[in-house]
Length: 74
Image (cartoon, rainbow, N blue to C red; front, side):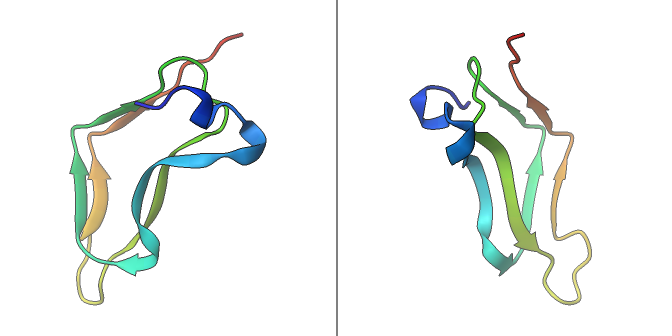
């Protein structure tokens, strides 16, 4: 859950969840998860996905049945 001053500046956005380092390869499976904010979080990048499938593996890095829920204040 993202919230607070760490995610309040949309000009200085940051990842809440970082899936792998930049240009990484590997097996990563995320399933049945809800990612959400606690109140407004204009600087939140909910998921930064950096993982690529290793050569010869199809669907080794993926997310299934997962949801992102953002709180919007209008």
